[in-house]
Image (cartoon, rainbow, N blue to C red; front, side, top):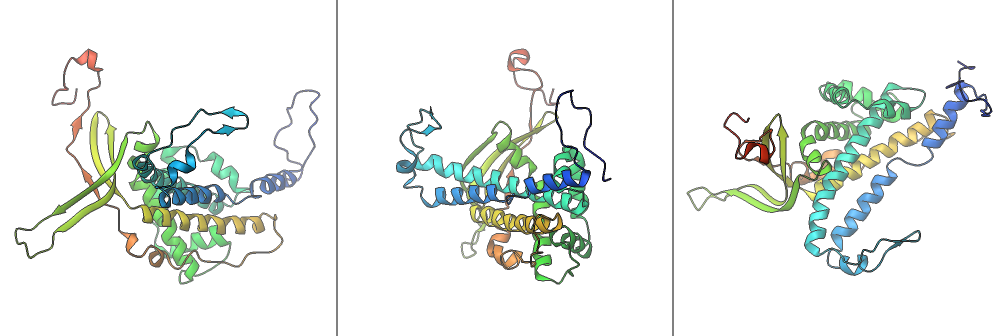
Length: 321
């Protein structure tokens, strides 16, 4: 492979250094491993946390004119406290799903052990194939999942009882659950913004007043609409802001561990890092947040007409057509 090059059909006159395959691989890895890929996510998390903690001060912070490299954006109106509150709710969902997908793609790329993980990430463009792989990994037994985590994250043989391994198995599994189970929620926000943020409380009160009501959901919600093959579903999704933000932090810590390992494995760094577990164990770090905020209520199915309103002239038939 020493004489292999990526391509040799450059136009006449273009000067291209004749690098060996190994030299080209080293250059790519040095470039893409220079900075922690979790850096962008961590900054977004910090900005989101700052926005949440300073809702009352936000108007004074972001009001006035903005000049970006000589361009006047003409933005003078600051968001209201209510607008910022809705933004934080929605952005926590977007950030969590972005972080979960980033973790899964890097994890599988490291597991495949290509000459650079970035080729695997760039190639994983087929949504259905990627989802099948996520589902297959999610179905692995714990010992198999631990073996994969040990290799992909640390390039070591660490047993499933190692604190770091058990913690990261939980983190990767929950990232897979987010990808599989919460895709409709993410797509409602990402594609066309078919979502409305607000607050809601739903509880069931027994006839006996001495029995405490059962609270199904209370707090931030995203109302979403999902449509498939002419059939729509209205969901009320309760959002736990602390849960989302803690999960993003733990995902970023896991990505950082893979990045540290990759820098040594692909010879960017001289020394191998000592395996470090993300904050405590996953369930300890999440605490009561582990199940909080997962509630969802689905409204009745609605049939969406395939014709435009002008063509149909009225509501759809019971058959949905």
